[in-house]
Length: 317
Image 1 (cartoon, rainbow, N blue to C red):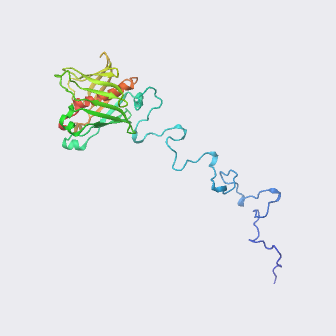
Image 2: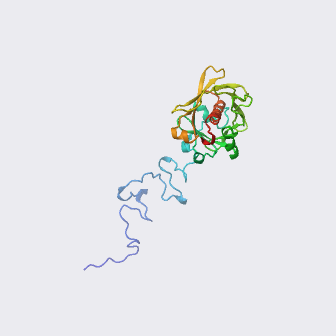
Image 3: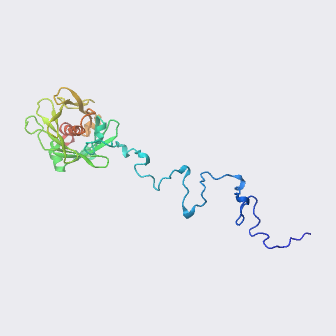
């Protein structure tokens, strides 16, 4: 039978005897060395020498000295100057275009526009004329503008295709970049003193050009003028501006002397049901890439004028 050793002051130490290889409070390692971690593991990945936890509740920096994203993510545009694609398939706005009206920068990079009129269900079912709405896209299908007619109900349903109207052309931020105004006028060749026209301004209030109908018996003719009222381009349509059996209707865009074709405005065949039941049309516009952006905007206005004159149906019939 053995007896326990006599109790001596300080033995056993409070909390038990220290484990081998671990530093304990109050006991400095010999020679200023640091005891290794249990099991011989090295420092944790990303350890930068600070004590854990850091003072005042601060967080350790991420590995490599990079910064974590702020709460809620990065603001637009993201770091590095790279812009995200605009939402809903809109075209990116070109930057740094000098001497260009705000909102027309898109037109500096394109030589073709596609104009699609939206189908209005109420108009298709009842024949009650509603405000026309359009989407303007580039050749890649990206949205460039949206256009909304501004007219009153009485004028639309009493005057029909001859009605005067304003057209607001908006960008993807709903800023009005182009304003079109069509006054009330005749469309018959019997009244050469009161023919169709449309004024174009960009930004609204700044006149940049106009479209004027020329008197002609057989074929539709128009001139495109700049802000100085000088002829820049001419437009000549077909003798019979009707879509028949899937064919497109082409209006040629000519130089001011009428000798050379430099573009076109054409109504696309949009299917037999759409053609028969609605007046929601599809158009295409082509022009030289180096054409002044103001004249490109005026050509867009010419497309809306041609649509109203030749393809807007009376009572949707």
